[in-house]
Image (tube, rainbow, N blue to C red; front, side, top):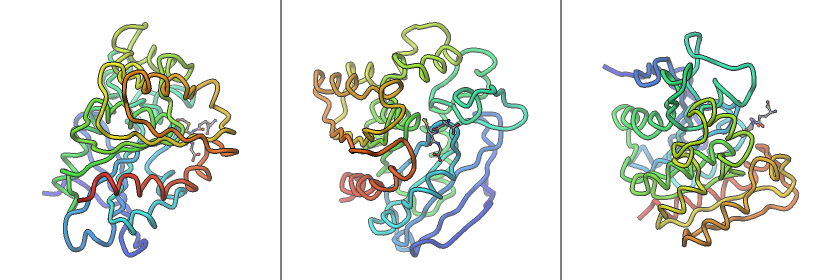
Length: 281
Ligand SMILES: N[C@@H](CCC(=O)N[C@@H](CSC=O)C(=O)NCC(=O)O)C(=O)O
C-alpha cells in the first residue's frame, strides 16, 4: 500500500514536479515534500539532489522561485525539497519567524516543548529517504547530493560532513556556517538543545569541519549585499576553519547580490552542474 498521497503534479521541462503528503511517524505529524523528476527518469535511475530551505520556507519556495527545473532536466537530476520543520496544530510553535514551525534547524531537539516533534536531521537522513526509495520511481539512492539556502545551507553542510558517503556532493547559498556563534543559531540552539554544550558543536559546520573533512569540494555562493552577511553568516569563520583543516572549499562572494531567490536563481544552474559532475559516472 502506498504511503504517500499526491497533492499536485505539473509537467515541467519534459519532466514532472509533484507534491506529496505523508504521515511522519518520526515527527508525529503530516509532512509535505516536492520532487522534481527529470525526463531521463523515464529510462532508468537518476541521481537524487536534496535541497534544504531556509527560515519560513516550505517545499514551495525553491520549486516556485529558483527555476531549478531547467538545469535539473538538462543534467538528469532528481531534486527533492522537504519542508523545514514539523507542522500542524499539535506541533509547538513560536510567534517569531526564526523558531518553531518553519525553523527546524536540521537537528534533533532535546528540550521541551520541542523534543517530541523537532527531529529534522533524522527526518532528512533516514525517514524521508526510505520513503523516497520505496515510493519514487527511479530515484538512485546510491547517488545523492545535498544543498540548501541559509538555515538550509547550514543543514546541507552539517549533514554532508556527518554523512559524506551518503551525500557525495554538497553546495550552499548564503549558509549559516557557524550557528553557535550567531544570533539565529544561538537562539535556536538554546531553545532546542539547552544551554551551550558539546551538543551545539554537533550542529555547527565550523566545529564539525575541525573534526571531520569530506573528500568533496564544498561549493558556496553568498552575495556581498546580503543583509544577513555580517550578523548571521560570517563566512570568514568557516573559510578559515576549512583552510586550517584541509577541507576543500570553493567559496564565491557574489558582488551586489542579496539573500533572496533572485540571487539563488542566478546561480542555480552552476549548483546543479556542480552536483551533476560529482554524482554522474
Ligand atoms: N524577515 C524575513 C526573514 C525570513 C527570510 O529571509 N527567510 C529566507 C531564509 S533566511 C535563513 O534561513 C527565505 O528564504 N525566505 C523565503 C523567500 O522566498 O525568500 C521573513 O520573515 O520573511
